[in-house]
Amino acid sequence: MLSAAVLALTILGGVTAVVFLADDARPPAGTSVMEPEPKARAIPRPNEGQAPSEPGDRGGWAQLALLGLIVVAVSGIGLVVVRGSTASRQRRAAWLAAADSERDGALESPD
Image (cartoon, rainbow, N blue to C red; front, side, top):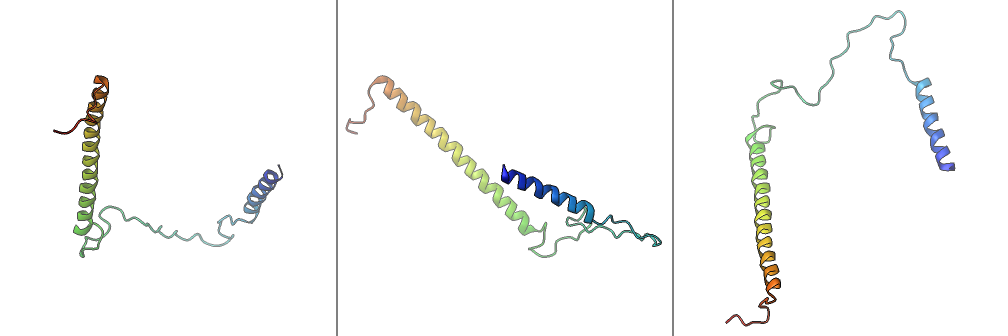
């Protein structure tokens, strides 16, 4: 109960402080409103940047080759998993069939 009360008072105190101490972002009386500066963008818009000129540039051949390598690797892993699960299902079916026949052949010689 005590920790909940402390947490609630801390949150309430923080909100109160922000309300009273925050700047309204209004220009002082008698000053002219200036034109706002354009916002900086972290991600350029389409056709706004420049074409890749070096192998390490974004969108260059090295980046596309890496994407291709990742796609091939993930596809190969998926193929191995699917083939392994198919073989596993076949072995399990054979094992269950041997259990149903009450003859598993484990003690028989391979001759």
